[in-house]
Length: 325
Image (spheres, rainbow, N blue to C red):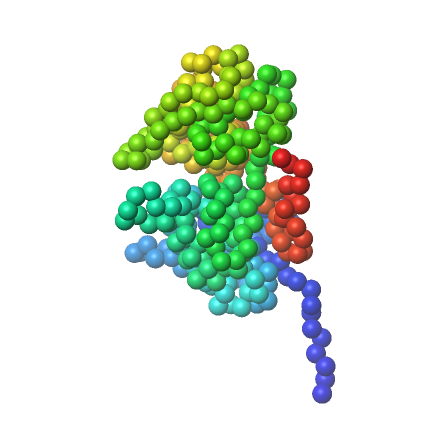
């Protein structure tokens, strides 16, 4: 009987959804491997078809998809990609979602509401995902919704490096736009060696995306305020917070956020504000019409590529942030 030679080396394969292929290509460039050719299109009734053009059997598969507008379309496409990989005998499937969809609905605020973030996690587990990778979850407890490993990456080092390089000579204070962001803001203060201020606000539960801003807790007069948040959606929270800081004597306001959702009136609000710079990453695609002079977009691709490499090599993703804050 002739013995068989078994190839034991692992095989990393990268797959890209259609939402933001440029990011996946940039991640692939850093890893030295390009996304696998994929056929994906929609039927006349909106149903999505996906098929990979190469064998994926036994591979360590990483599906990169930025769940941008239209969210439901790209979420469904990603689920179908995972199902296709599972049925084609991929050895391990990691879904890389830089922006986790439905993360803001992570608990029941009132009766008869869904916990949408948990449902998303359940759907990926059912589809066949073994692992999730994401950047700056809206709330850290979402990691516990998925029954498997979740690599929670942080954009803080990337954003903070930019702030230090461009505004580090100023008298800085880090500002949390609400009580829920205080822990993140504290990490920023550790990184920048700056003070902390908090904006106390109330949100009307009956009016989505509308915020009532209250008062500033902390010293901001004469200082350059670094306003930190996880995302900018319609821009209402950030621009109202910035105006409140200026009303309290702030010399300058810089806004940093990981996810530039930039829905609806966001761009006009930011352009017409007194904010000196808005810094985001490209976890989501920033369209040309959404760009403006004071907007800076930093690439998250090197961080994602390093994290994928650590997962593939059975290394430590946590080590990427040791000493970061």
